[in-house]
Image (cartoon, rainbow, N blue to C red; front, side, top):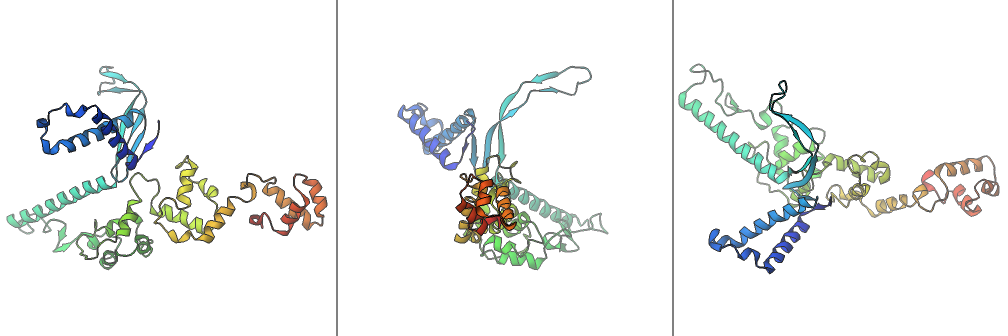
Length: 355
């Protein structure tokens, strides 16, 4: 229950369900001529995929097909509904508490819908230009002040010509012509001008479509973009901030305090912080030296489960040493550790993070 299932496990579940039913010849009972023999295997693959989704939701689990969609059972509280007759009290009824499927589309499906929207917009613009030209209804012959289709006085108002554009034509062309280098490296040149999401739109040629480019998208960058799905809680700028904190040597549990509401499970956040997730974002910070530093941070001071002293105890020990107390005298105040431990603290051999 309450398990998240991803594509690999989902594929295996569909396979196992088909294999189990095939043992009993369940799907041989439907005549093949019902759907046509050529589509027989495809038909049953789709059917069992849908049945597996039913099973997942019935178990209270969540299915995540990255880039495509996420679906899970969601609890809805009991509520009162009406059909506009509140004052008379008629047609008022109670909707009991229930679970319903909550569907959220992913980046790939959203992009497909956006492409359809762009197609309709382009068709409408072309039709507008065609009709204005056909009926010759520009001023002074009519009321149209433009040629239509987003063109004013013969100049396109899309892309860099748009008054709200963040980039010049030259900057957008530069991005399109340099898509063969890592995306985050290219973005560093524009991060003070536009957001990462807007930059990605230009990079993928979803905006500034009036410009041309022959530079193919570097495969690395396709994989890079795929890390940031619609179901993600952090965007590129958030991950960059975490990478910078990692490079500065800030221990992950300190940073996690600001992300508790997003990630109740702290180990999910830990995987992001140490680079097990979003691996393609600033991988250069995960040097052996930095890895060793963060490992030592996790085993030093109070974070060490075997520590007998707190940070305040250590500060007090060093203050007493500066006041002229001997190690033996200090040990009498902190009998839980040996005089050797006191000496190591005073000399800075241990608890180095407090020096």
